[in-house]
Length: 218
Image 1 (tube, rainbow, N blue to C red):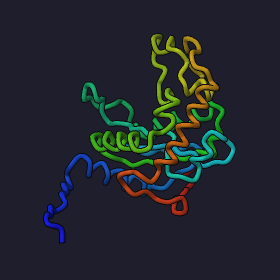
Image 2 (image 1 turned 90 degrees about the vertical axis):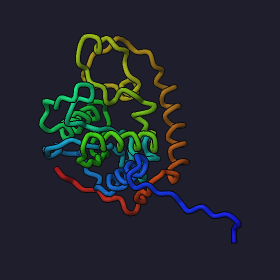
Image 3 (image 1 turned 180 degrees about the horizontal axis):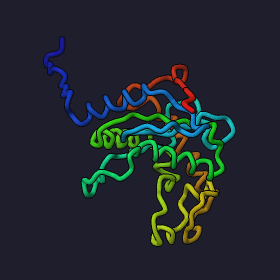
């Protein structure tokens, strides 16, 4: 018997535990095909995009894993003002925009899936942060710019994003190219290798490749 003993500590309402619960429930949701227009639904919440194909070499190592290429949230209110957003279907609209970006970027939309969970804004924020920190999705961390919106002259004068440099084609203007595409791809490949190495060290359990469930909601 050890000479000293201290019981384990558990706070079910801690920020960390709530985040784990959100991510566990999120990852129980099915992976939904983006091949067809996404049926409209109400509400805000948490979402992530996944590559599940065989033709894009860069993302092929992620195709049979639970690692998202992008994680985000769509809120019901403006985080700066607290006012409700004008959009009635914020989560659906965000996914619809991303679907268009993927297609315009020359990527095969039939090889992408999304996962979504309707949540209050505060919980969507916790979930997004956990997914980003835990998985370091490639489009959030290395090939940045995927989720940006072109909203005005200042935005349009911004330099071409890393995502748009690698996946050129979105119908938007920019102030020039500053990134080397070969260097970006090399960095992205190294990052994905590290994601694979860290895959089983998350704070929450996640489904194995064999239990991933794909559906077509089109």
